[in-house]
Every structure is written in structure tokens, then in C-alpha cells.
Length: 280
Image (cartoon, rainbow, N blue to C red; front, top):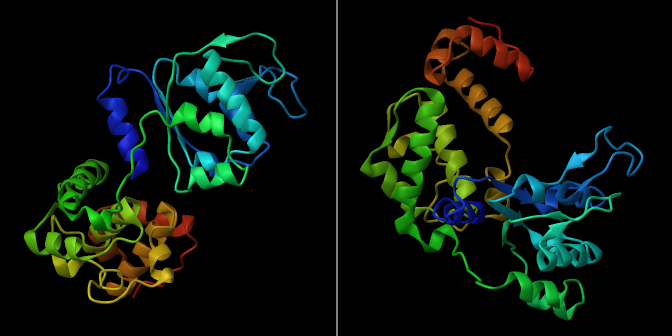
């Protein structure tokens, strides 16, 4: 949900016509994130591209750079980031030229930065530089009234993606509101998309959602919390196809119809995911 908030801030600001670039600091190897943020000149290090590389700060010029999981930045890199924010300019790795930047920076973390400051793992001066207007985002389970709006937004996007209009009825919405969503908004999006693919319906009912995940009266297990939220879209798609195959006993025509794709497209996906089917 942090990226959705950051995107909303960007889209409602005078910078909305300029780039919004989200970056998860935890997704980069520690020796690569500096070159990603600031860029590098040709020959700056072994393996550098011939013409160098433009950093994300430059790519976000005029817009917004969203640094998620900023607590994952190494201490030394935090000092370089502080300098960029203070000087409003960036110097590429291996370069000597200062490049002016005009970028709004939004940072997010699930760590306690104040405790990290006490442990000398996060710079105090950087903290005060980025914590100008702190926002605390509640988990989805504590803002159940938002579920309808968020789910409908996902349905709109997915309807465009799969070229068919899909809606939720009141029973489906009730089930979604009763669940605790340990995986937050990402889990909601994944489950909605998965249900669209499996059901093949234009109006989703409560019974269409996987009961394995929607158990409002049972405590959430740690394994359940990460099972869906941690899946990639490819993993979700593969599992969805396997479920449809099982449901229709390997009848590829029915599977393709359920998924809303052609048989040729289904064959390509079966090959992509190494799924072998003997059609009966």
C-alpha cells in the first residue's frame, strides 16, 4: 500500500505530468544500488556500459522518486543520498560534473528508523532531512471501509487487461471485508486477479473466492500470510491454469474459455510453464 499512497501524492501534485519512479531499495544488490540511483560514466568500473548510464534521480527529473525500504540502504550510501538532497545535484559514479536535479523524494519503510539511529545503522541527519511530513499507513485490516474502493479499482484495471468487465456483488464484498489481509493490498490484488482467471465470471460472488485464504473466524498462520502475497504473477498464473485444468478434467477448450483466452494462447502458456496435458 505504500506505493499506492506515494503514487496518489504524485498524481495530485503539480508534478503529475512528470515521471513517477518507484524503487525498492531492498531489491538491488548492495553494490549496484548506487549506480542505479546516481548513474555512472563510461569506464567507471569493470562491466560498465559503453555510454554509461543515467541514474534514477535524473530519470525522475521534474517528478517524484519513491524510495521504498529506505532502511535497507548501507550507511555509507545514506551519506551520499543526503548530499544529493542538500545540494540538489547528483554526480555520476566516475564523473566530475554536478548535474542539477529537481525531484520530489518520498521514502517509505517498515522499520523503526529512530531505533536504527540509536543502533548507528541509520544516519540521524538523513532522517531529519527526509522526515519532513511523516505518514503512518494503517494495515488493510484496520481500514476495512477502503476495501470496496481498492477492490473496484483493481477490477477496473483487470477488466481492461483481460478485455472483459468484471464486478463484485455484495456477498463477495462482505467476504473480502471479513478477512484480515495479512498480505495487505498486494494480497488483495493477487487474490482478485486469481479469482477472475479461475472463475471466468463477469460478476464475482463470495463462493468464487478461494476459501483457503478467506477464513475470517480462524487465526492467520504465518505460512498463510506469505503464501499468496509472496507469489509472483507468473506463479499465480501457473497455479490458476493448473486449478482450471483440474476443474475441467483437462478439457483445454473449457479451460481456455474459463480463462478468457484462445486455445493457441493456452498452448503457449502450457509450454511456458512446462505443463503437460493429455486431453481426454
